[in-house]
Image (cartoon, rainbow over all chains, first blue to last red; front, side, top):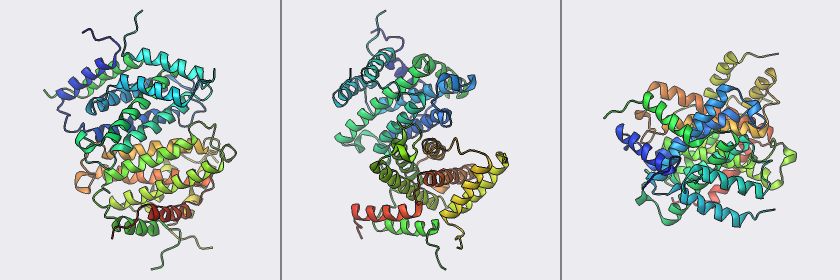
Length: 108
Length: 108
Length: 108
Length: 108
């Protein structure tokens, strides 16, 4: 099968190889990955905490780069946590969108 | 262009349509989305906080379903925050893997 | 010794008795308490995520009560985590204020 | 009135003076303080994320000092957020202990 270039499955493959090459499996329990995920999210939040809205005009280049890196870190831990808990992240997201659509009806 | 079925670009399109149909744009500042992301991550962490490791044998079906839904919520807010900050999430993840590979050399 | 009525030492005594009466010691590792603390903080953050500033006029009574309870939960886990890690919370706070005063000189 | 030396009221006074001397009031909305609190908690969590339990034997001196400082930071933001939302932190904690006692009956 052809793995699409921006797919979550592709990132899963890369993160598996990365962790394996470093013998990180013993550390990568779901509990620990959930903690690490929360830490990365906070590093993202940190960029926005004193700003009015976080719109681009409020950011400088250092903040833009930091946000880009932290978004990536969050995604990489998320992919790994989903992998360890056997969740197909994309399928779960589609399910959740359907549930949310029922919970919050469209207003227009 | 053909959007691959499990791509992040696909989810970005879906979340844009979802928010637009509910007039949520005024609420979806980067700052607010970062906060919402941190709240969803905590709902994920909550499933693991009193468990030894979070391995599958420690979970019941309710926890498994909750984890699946929370992983999805985290991904959906992450996709929206990346969209609002103009970050290509997949490209950023690939860049970060390359940076991490330089920072943490493989041990085997 | 007379324990002052609003002291942190008083809360430490109460939380110790509470956990002991429920045999919660095996769950109350520093790691788990840190996770629980982060979950409670997120429940606090949740009240503010879509509000402009969180000022009192933006809140209703349910939010005010929720915030009060979540602030309490955060404090109770913080006291327990400090207890388990052998940190005198009040002394540490005074030290940190002194460090911050050196780091951020007063502007008036 | 005599302020007891380790009281939360004492810390509230100190944090008010500190913020006032730096003209930080415009930044210290409840929303922003809640975000800052979550960031500090994550810096605390970071010390424990890869450890088995966070027991003292698993820590080195740098981690012990870091934990002490982060616990202090969390307390200082918590005191400020309670101040801005008009919550008496100690009274709220006593109320929450009573609620928790009803919710989780003692097992011995």
